[in-house]
Length: 394
Image 1 (tube, rainbow, N blue to C red):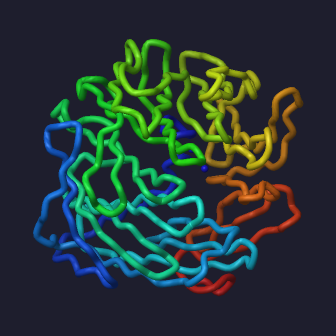
Image 2 (cartoon, helix red, strand yellow):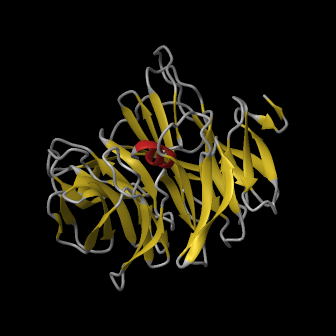
């Protein structure tokens, strides 16, 4: 809900890392299944058994029924489930702080909130955790080095990842079934290209099409839109895609609205006009949805469900400071953009499933955060970043 300057940082906002002295890692709690998913030098990866590695502690709490209006956030070594109707949070996953040199965590959720995919890197160890928050089920799959940019499909069945490798038969964008069975390479790319391999950005609502960032090609930043049920394709930045069923669009990020994908640009140092364009995969028609003002750049776009509208986050291109406000605009074709909210500490925004509310995560202090309804009808809620129940945070 936005890699590439400020807009890219917003998309990868669900990352946390810590640095501590090295020591032995504790074993995880809960039910854990271990497997190794390591691609062989062919377009299809083959899973093979592997000894159980030493790994960090991860605890999963079963929360029962997942609320219809929900969201997940990673906050200080915890994954929180937000019941937005009840305005309360539940801790779903907690990571023990392992004594390792470097560590990072990225999460992605299915559309219904029933499945979480968590990519955890601990020094040289890379783990893919599949979590069922309702039941507390946990499965851990050891992944090969180079796997990055995790993105779970809306139906919760496949994880899209980029895999960097010096081997041209492995380097590219892969689709991994969550059961740990062999993955397939969807987009192949020569590892010699700058920015390789392609990074998954957004799945279509029906989990069939995938938009990926393909680095800087002949026409600037490129978004690759590929049919995941088709054959594998090869990406060459200077000439585009060959094989499979895909299109190359100009842009730096993307989000889906039905059969359309909204693609946008930021303002580059050498110029250019940030725009949001709509591309229909059926008709292959492109329409400009929004053009930023002369002094603005685009940070994020979220499409409103059941509507032609979208929320666009913009900020000034020059004289940017930590307190520079970010503005949320409501845009739609043929209608003048309308400013909804301005905040200097806006980190994420998303719509409710019915499109009635637009939520925004706003700043707080080192122990608290705020979720606000941009339209003001729902109000806001305070949550604890480290633990406890607001306002008595620990």
